[in-house]
Image (cartoon, rainbow, N blue to C red):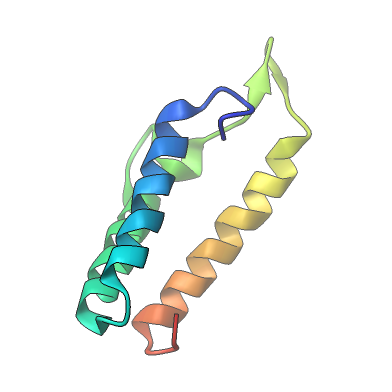
Length: 86
């Protein structure tokens, strides 16, 4: 996200990563972080789902990778809520 000039999102995602590490094996703590990350998908305009990587009005090639990673993250988080190990 930093490479495409999205420092706020980069920082937010890094914070979630740190929180997961801090939660360690504490299942309740990890579940709280998972729910918070899923909250990014529920935001209205300007939320995580609305990010389009572009420069000079053109969508960057990295957009396809972001879309794929965003979908993978969502599926993984949903699995965590269903009880799969993180």
